[in-house]
Length: 149
Image (cartoon, rainbow, N blue to C red):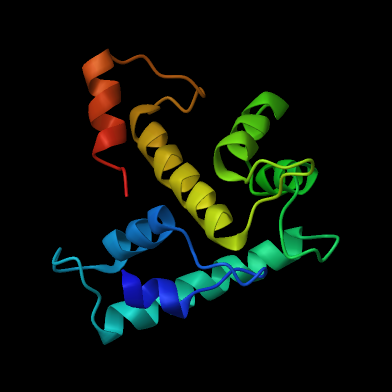
């Protein structure tokens, strides 16, 4: 993970955070050894570039970070119908505390990837495509834990 963190920086020159790096290693480590081979790194690099392009598209003020408003718009344009309160929860959890909290690229990748994975898990259970499901607590915990990256 140390090498990956050295290779990846946000627009403000901060290193990618450990959580995002570990998530990406787990996604591209096909042997489950905790390491990525050259092919895995190539796929990871392409993955990051795709997210970076999307990040830059939603960074409307070109600040190098995504504000609450930009994140709300990005999630909406990606097809997520999430409340402003949920977006605020994401900002509170994934952005540094400041007067104007903003999300860096690493956290944007982490949030969007986790939303995609959880959406896929939800859709597998929502066979009637009604937008709601009924499941036991254990099914819920299993569904989320098995998809944590």
